[in-house]
Image (tube, rainbow, N blue to C red; front, side):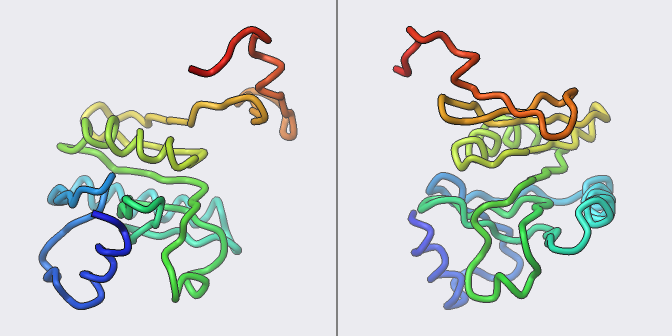
Length: 172
């Protein structure tokens, strides 16, 4: 299914409010039911990220993100530039951070969703892994022309990915 078709069905009320669906890679996926730990985790992450990002950023909870023609997931938390008023006419397309709070859906978040977010160029994808009480951090693969900043470097350090790759290496 294409995202425009999905959005049209949503706009005409085809899906009921009790249906917890999201479009991932052209497939309608039923969202996992929320347990109390997941609900609390979502609120905790929202609170912390609002404090960290501050003005000029919208911390959105379980709201659609229009990633590509076949995907409109509803991550547990997404940080996008601007304010909620900036998205009256269309869902945001480029979150700077996505956080999934994972319990029973951990495998899906690690594979399908992480792959989706990487393909869309999301620069930071986190999973709060409830079962193991750890934070998993995923970042996309980088290619020639991209730049990377090592996590341990001073702010502003910027390395050209091309300088780290062999001149003979070519994408397949």
